[in-house]
Every structure is written in structure tokens, then in C-alpha cells.
Amino acid sequence: MSTKEITTTCCIAGGGPAGIMLGYLLARAGVAVEVLEKHSDFFRDFRGDTVHPSTLEIMYELEILNDLLKIPHQEVRELGVQIGDQQAVIADFATAKTKCKYIAMMPQWDFLNFLAGKAKHYSPFSLRMNTEVIDLIEENGSIIGVIANTPEGKLRVKAKLVVGADGRTSIVRKQAELTVEDYGAPMDVFWLRLSRKDTDPSRTGGRVIPGLLFAMINRHEYWQCAFVIPKGKADEIRQAGIEKFRARIVEVAPFMSDRIHEIKSWDDVKLLTVKVDRLTKWYRDGLLCIGDAAHAMSPVGGVGINLAVQDAVAAANFLYKPLSEGECTEEDLLKVQKWRMYPTRMTQRLQLFMQRNFVARTLGSKGPMVIPSPVRFLTSIPAIRSFVGKVLGVGFRPEHIRTPEKK
Image (tube, rainbow, N blue to C red; front, side, top):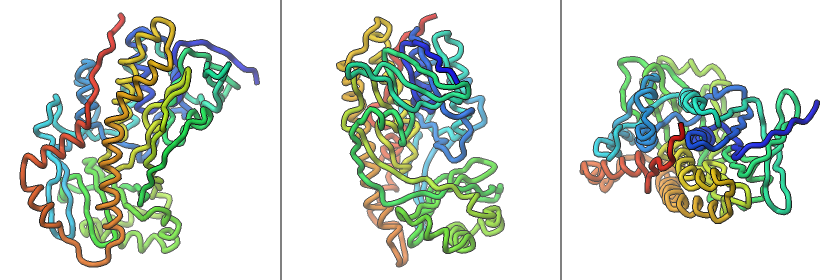
């Protein structure tokens, strides 16, 4: 097969939330963008489906929120936890200083198709599916493009800036030989679905019994469930058999007993290997990493998609002008990392605290469990629930649209 070569201003590896959002904003500002996505579509099961108030605020600022909310979704206005027989509301989004005071639950493929559709209204935007970045093009120590596999053969894309937005297993950051600091995680997650009935509880949240943390997301017609397991124990749990796995779900959520056989085999259960890591340096001359490629987030709080979107907004804010003027320096890329490091570091610190002090202890517990008295007291105070809602829903130093629209 032949090798084709094209030239653009910005080449983005990865068509996830960070990549599509950045491509959209740059193209909207008049910057030529090629987004390369290795899959043929965005349909992947058990991806992050939580669109937080901070992301909805970005949609509002772009004047596309009303169109987004036409997509079928559920509104989660508070988050709760049930430990044993006791329940508590831990986060309330009612006082968030955003247009939408809730988490919108919608399939990520719908969200990405929506953003890509909006981006295609701008002629500088190009999205190439079935295009997998496999290597970088380097010249005199600078990154000047990528090499990708396509059904038609190799594709060389030369660009003033390459952005790695290709997730926690990023080929871009690997080929760029960027240093990753791994902070560890005590758990992995089995994702699964079970049907939902009108008589079921309605609240999205977690259920806890000795040795098991089970999160349930209300998707109206079904429950999207996270069965949290100790790190590296997936094979051991599989070997114990699907019947024992089903029994543990019924133990933590007894009302599921009448539909537990919807889990027919391990094919219905998907494993997420949890990582919490961060690049020490997010860039090289001609290259920047954002989203999970720069900092893999724990599923705690479901904030990954929203951190990725925030990264994209910040990157566009800092880089659209130098890219438009024809030169994007390492100093420009450093500004993005410096600005986004604070919310990234703070979010990961919070996730690591929760992993060590709640998740790990829960997975290792054997005796009866109750909600600790200090937690019961704190969650009874509306201001505390609102504060937790702000941290989870809006985050640390949320971004705002600063890029112009070039028509």
C-alpha cells in the first residue's frame, strides 16, 4: 500500500472527549485541525457517561447546551451512599454556580457524536476514523507530525503541533518518551448492566457491605454498575465462578435478585484496570499531551471525562493565537501544563485520599459496617453536601471559553 502525506496546523491523536473538544474549539477559532481516531465509530461500552455541571457550563458558553440536552439523558442532582442498612446523601449540586445544577448521564458515544457534528460546521475541522497513530515524526529533536495506519495504507500527517489525546495507554506519550509517575490504585472495576424497574430505588450512588463496594448509576431503563474489586484479583474472582459473583451482587443489592441471571457469563462483565498517574512534563517541542494521556484518573467521582474537556478548553485558550500566527513554542505549551496542573493535582490527591481511606478499607473489611458518626454528622449539614457537590460537579478552577468564533 502507498503512503499518503498531508499537512495541517494541529494534528490530534485520539477522538475522545479531550481530542474532539480541542479540535472543535480550534477549528471554531479558524485553526486547521486533523483529529485521528483509531476506531470506526465512538461506540464503546462502559465508557465514562457522566457529563458534569462544569462541562454543561462549557456547552452553555458555546450556545449549544439546548441542542445537547435534546439527547436522551438522566439528571442526577445528588449522590448518595448506602453502608449496610444506613443511607446518606454525600453530594448535592443544587447550589453549583452553573446553568445546570446536575450531572447529565448520557452515553459517551452520543456526546462525542454531538461534539463532532458541531465541529464539522467549521471547515478547518477534519475527523478521520479508522486512523490509528502508531509513531511520531521527529526532526532535529522536534516533533513535526505523526504516522498512522489507515485501511488505505500509511498516512503521514505533518503539523505545527501534535496533541496526544489518546488516553491512558497513549502511544503518543510512549513514543515521545515522556516520564510517567504512577501513584497506584488499590482496586480495579468490573462494569456490568442490569435492567431497572419502576419499583427500584432511584438514587445514583454507592452501596457498601463488608469487602464490597458496588456503585449503581440510574440510566432510567437500566442500571450501569461498578463492582469494585481489589487490584489484580480479576482472574481469581472469575475462577470462583459466575454464580458466586451474582450472589455477591444480590447480597449488596437484594432487589436485583429477580434479574441477576441477566449476567449470563463473564462476557457480560467488562474489566477496567484502574490507574492514577501523571506525566512530569506534558510536552516536548511540537507536542502536547492532555486528558488521560497526561493524567489517568481514578473512576472515583466519575470526573475523568470532565477533566479531559477542561484540559481541551485550556489548551485551546492558550494555543489558538500562536497556532493562528504560525508558531507554537515550548513556552506556550508550558503555560498549558502550569495552568492545568493545579486542578489535576488537587483532583488526584482527593481521589488517592478516597482510595486509601475508603475504598481500600472497604475492600479489606470483614466485620459489620456502619456509616461513621462524623460522616453522618457532616452529611446532615446542607453546606457540606453542597461543598462536596461543588468539588465533584465543578472541580478546582473550572475553565471558560476564551477562544473566538471565526465565521
